[in-house]
Length: 167
Image (tube, rainbow, N blue to C red):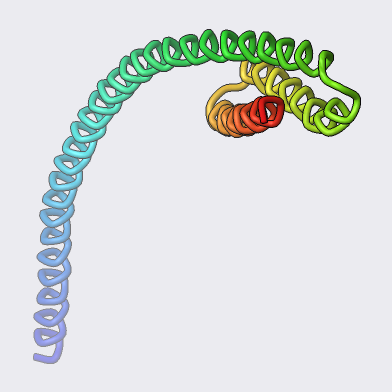
């Protein structure tokens, strides 16, 4: 009888182990199926994201090229206008110099510092314009702002000198 109990217990343990082992295999198979499906979905999402990234990159490249063309046109127009403006300042400076040469010594002495400053500002503006030729991006914007500031100083000083010569 004892042997029968032990045998029954052992058989019951084996059945339980077998049943538990079979359940694990079913669960493993279900997990594997779920894992495979998830892998497929991840791969599809990755492929789709790659396609979208390529499309976005192409769109950005096209937009950048168009903006650069437009910007380059604006830059070229500004540079041409600035060169003309500096040429005009050269002519105005020569005109002031000629008028100053005709003035008496006291008047010449009073204007000489301003004329020298005007020449210095004009040279600095020409240097900034030359720097603009090689600048790009933020450096171009900053150099342009410095150039425009010099131009305003030149205009103000020119007007002051001209008024001093007349008055």
